[in-house]
Length: 553
Image (cartoon, rainbow, N blue to C red):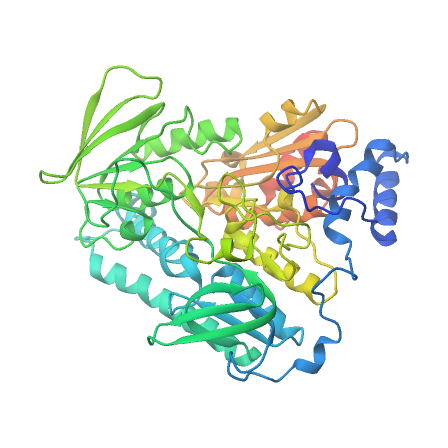
């Protein structure tokens, strides 16, 4: 976790998976000085071996290797050129126009690099914008509004004589949001002079990409540096064929033409719980089947238990330690045969629609990686060094196709850092500082380590918790389920992880992200004035509970 925590609690940087890491990078003096001053201010001063070794986590990402192959010097001379992609060699070619790809392309152009972005979909934004993050959040919000109107409004004195769902209008609002944002990215491409090629790209050499365009033509895009940003695809399950009608992926679940009476969700991860929440609020009977013993396995255990109870209060049913062994679509709806994960007596589940959300896998099919010899691991992820370069000179990869969390905002950070390295500057991404959010209601957001991870590392720690039932703003709006939980190293009070379950946890978590990024102690948050009445006061109170005692509990 950044300057201290990379050593203290273990870095999740892809060192073990990647043989190309440059191990000996020197931390800039300014960060080392800041580190020492913070340590002295908090604990009277002794740095110690652990602190010094911990600085390496940041240093490995921070230090720029200006002599590496492919670095582009004097980049500003290229600004203002956007000729046809095949006519001249680009400084940067990006394959994929999702969050990682389009951000990388814009950043490259802003740094004065002649840039082309290739996108097969014909609409920028990738899975996230078109059939993922954005449309799902639109439906989550719309369905929450309906649920609130039906269940919460009367207690606030707002009553309706009749309340109904207009599903086509709900879908139209979602589609409007998606199309507007997609056009917005195209506008940013024009503003920053990024050349946009619509089509499927495939390597023919380490500096050439053959593109079959959506217009039926073929063009070759040449680049000194090529960034693979092709994202990920739905993970399939043996014997469960997705037809996007009865058996759907998240893509199909975002476009159902009617509300299913019974919905079975295979997989209790972020996507499955979010889409289950959407249709559950609109009236579906939702059953979640999960092979693992827990929902969202990466979540802090204590928070997870409270979260599952909340979902069960919303009538979501769970079948944990259960696997699907058979599917029958020959009748109306779908019949699933399930059995215990460890084997045992089988049973049958009936559903109108089955959502397969068992995870995602890197999308690299058809890119011609084997043609140029790009190395991948057993999970299909492209191996890169700390500059995001593959084993092939001048070929880089970012986002879901490389090790690390499969999140849009992580891909964006990858894209910026990768381009900075290409331009001969310094880039930095610390995967221990990437927040994760489940956008249900309440939301669950976290950054850093879970309590289970801290225990496994043998670190002496302390915990501070504060429930939203004791938060005045949460009580005033009658939405007080959840808590804030902070983990800090016992000796130094340095924050190791923060976990929040609350209606707006996805917004509240960024105070914690910033705190971890700068190696803050829980006392730092506790002594920072927070406006009253706000939900964020719960973060302050949890910090107070970590190093001392809270006031309002």
